[in-house]
Length: 344
Ligand code: PHE
Image 1 (cartoon, rainbow, N blue to C red):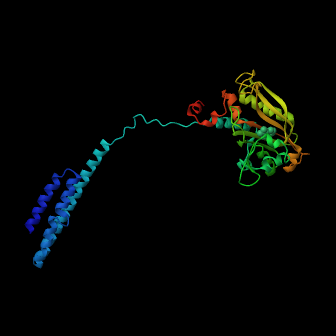
Image 2 (cartoon, rainbow, N blue to C red; image 1 turned 135 degrees about the horizontal axis):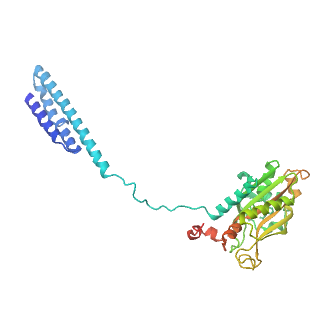
Image 3 (cartoon, rainbow, N blue to C red; image 1 turned 120 degrees about the vertical axis):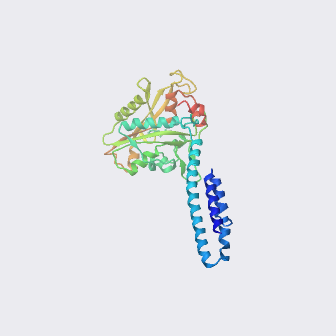
């Protein structure tokens, strides 16, 4: 038996020596050290020996087993490292190869115009209204009543409103002017804010009109604010947005919530004022509605008209973008045709 053990040791050592891969090592383990391996079959026969021999042969068997385990582990570590090195070599990634093309998104032209206009007014000292003061789903109360539109007044029809089934009086706002009221109710003057956002009107869609679009509302309330301030701020805005070359005009107008009121037109960029489809043959495009905040509106919003005055304005983002980039159809903004959007 001792001879057998010595033979196993010699053979196994030779096998370990010859092993080239981790698979070989696995095989050696199986052959000599597993439950059905050669060492174990010798251990099984120990029971037939005398106590004295059991001790001697048993000790030797354990020694051989330990011996083999150590050499197997040493050899395995060596092979494993070699195999890992080879794997790292063959699977190396060439980071200098050109990458795959991933298309990059762009800012929508309406968003960039909005950002640009907001930045201009910020440079003039206005700040963004809190979004809670400018909701798109609104009540008639803030969209009309508080803005001095009398109930049943035909002025409500000026802006064909979308009514909802959420509750009677809950509408999609037809103008960002709701932000004026909420701002005045929730804050004390001086107020100097702009409120960009989406508005909805039930209109037949054509090159000039869509049933939703975007406005930017402005409000300035303080002591001693006059129509001269309104003109100064809006002229400065037009100069910064269009450059000084664009011809504009202030035209007297009517809004229930401002008195006096004005509309500001810009000469049509498509026809240079001669008249075309974009300007409905008028030669002018309206870009701004404005006026001094009506005394009634100040009062009902909790501001003392004896102490404070103010002006408000609202402009269409689509129209301002169309004028800047000579776009002749409002529907292009919402078709999401990549060929159009890519140009900006
Ligand atoms: N809300 C008006 C509109 O949508 C524009 C406006 C805003 C007019 C503020 C005056 C003051 O037509």
